[in-house]
Length: 258
Ligand SMILES: [Zn+2]
Image (cartoon, rainbow, N blue to C red; front, side):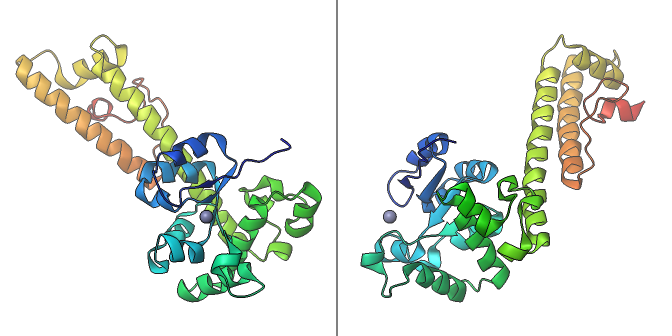
């Protein structure tokens, strides 16, 4: 573990581009509300579970109305979000600025007690406290997060079903990306005129008859149908991505026609 953990102030205002830099170098960031303007970057932050410590009351005073803050949508999507105070001497009215953030968020966004516990847990996970402190608050195996076994329900009060849901959704996204990667490989293979898969596919579906225009048209239809079927399978969760006996990465039209 590095002595220093980089947790810069980023993505509250200004250009979205610096969030790309912090994605590469930071362990967590403070703010990050501008991720709502760049879905791809937001997706990367989700996949890497980079912590975002948002401060909606500070944003409300400076840049973004409370009711337009992306915190609730980030949280629902499963980004690793927590609440922070930013500049307590300027924006808060009590000796407990963080409690103010939690209370206002809970009331305005109607957060459940389960939500509150999850956000509080994220807050400890994102913090720079040493191992013994985190262990004290989150349990012996907190470092296994985001796996459900990293959640000690007696200490965090976050229900197991919530951690399992978060973990399964994250794994589902990684599976989707792996499947899509295989699909892209297959498509580039098909577009190469001399690849074995491409040749087999062409002769299986189109035979050797027909004009070249007809063949091209058939080929185009084949690609569209094949990719659609692939993504439908992936969405249903039964696209296994394995080679079938024709050597195709998925159950392609050529194999189904035989
Ligand atoms: Zn700030």
